[in-house]
Length: 450
Image (cartoon, helix red, strand yellow):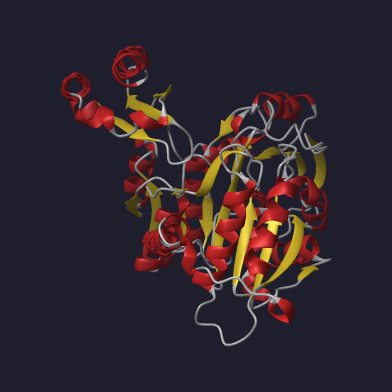
């Protein structure tokens, strides 16, 4: 990945790594690069999640944007996809979301959107990086009446809610729905959105205080929701992450339904309705082997992308597909949204659940999951990429792949958002793949984790 931007924007520990100075420079550089062909005073929208550091970084971004002559319009606390939608609705020149998504509170991040509502390509991000790191003197500051202005978009959350509501044709009226807001952005939107759709809504983890985002809750910590759904006799549970661009679900028995299964449910429903474009769906290399068997059984073409919803999106745009996503819950319904949208995804699943007349556990049975083991190995930044050139590590991986044969697979990759190497193994025998994952991760920790 780039020097500042990973698979989902710039990210780091807020204030000490993702500093105010860096945020201001990103604001300046983004305004320069994304508005260089503009013949009017540019306008950039800024949204944020509920982290205590988001206000500070918002102020720094605004300073950077306005110091080069662009206007900044503040959206307040909104989901990431709200920024993508409102950029298009307002015909703004660019959008910024301040969030570290599913990461814990000490992290924060800056995600950039173009005027079309899409995340930036690697090439545009590289241009912004080069301006900040190599030629900062090219960012011309302005003065006097040329300085940009800061304004506030008062109805940002409401406009987003109305748009998602308009995207659902069959209202899930009468469904009892538990929603875990991760003490994040969806705390500002979920209650009203899903109530307007006709569901009976029960919220948990929807009281953000600046410090509790993603803390033992949301799509990365499903235990509370799984228990809550059963105890409160809910038809389904939905879990979002900090900026609400991910959605995972829980069926009525308390079993988790991950992104792969949600994509399978949506793809099958769209296929039956004649709405699945090119009769294809885009997933990533991390998708469970069970999805491959589902796609074959349904005669759906499966397109595989690299990890990261931007890469899923690229494949979707290139092939004209309208459903794609990741096991982690980033799901893109491209007919309605230009990026992953947790609440739109949740609403679509509720629509399918209501129309089917089935229970959520029945819908989730469309795909059988292979046992999968994931181990995360922390590595220091200066050791990134080194493991790929270590023969002790690569030879061990090769031996285990030969041992698995066609009965499973091994995927070892660096996280694009955290200082981690992820070791993922799938196969029919859990004990076998778990032992393999432990052995490989321990070897990586021994050779590259110091």
